[in-house]
Length: 307
Image 1 (cartoon, rainbow, N blue to C red):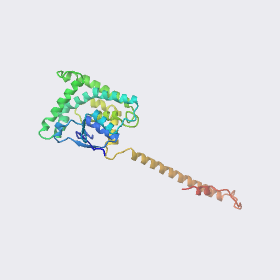
Image 2 (cartoon, helix red, strand yellow):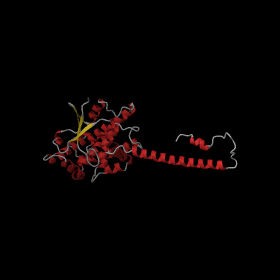
Image 3 (spheres, one colour):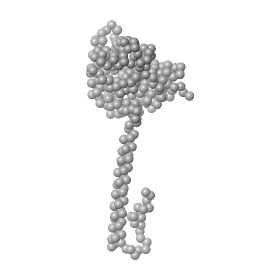
Image 4 (cartoon, rainbow, N blue to C red):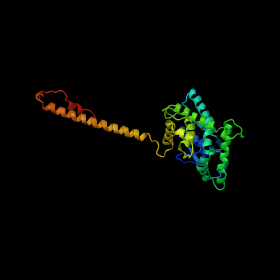
């Protein structure tokens, strides 16, 4: 019997199963691949300080980082990418690298460095989910980690000021969003009709930006102008994280039932018309009642048809 898998991550809010980008990536991929995870939020526990989230625990095995967790799930035969061609697999790696290089720095800046967003949303949220006295320490610690990661990702030294690279960060992020929007087009997912690891990464990066109530974010405003990307996030939430999923089946069934009802009504009308025509033929002078072997009438043909 396979060991149970536990995922430790930050909890949910804003209509999302988790507000944490990397946690959302793993949660989405688990849904797409059919992996059953026991989700254990680190909120209000000392693991907010000690745990590196997301963290997957399976028996004696502990796996961290989204890429490593997804590889572990694939080894357990939970693979959402098994139908991808070699070309699509290469495209997946390229777009994930694009998200990490171009979009992640802007997301970190939006939530952790922008003073207005940090004061009004990010710091209060993480402080309220950390136990005393960690609630005074955790938000500032995470903000310092985010700032360091931005400068390292941009290839800048830690002595550089964030204002020196801020403009380039947001222009690259908007370009990345435009490329994602063009690649997605009018489809539900990036490759055909089935979600893959690229959809999981895109959802993890886009959903918090789409759903968070940010006081100041030109990047969020740009995302909301790209209707297909916001619809992409909403569709994944509805199809895979809604308590009353799937939502697509009831409308289809209702349409089929409505069409069947219309077809039944049409058949009944045609049947009534045929009966009237048959009655008229019987009462017509052209009908010869003295014939001993009449041809089968429309009525008899109708009666011989199974209901």
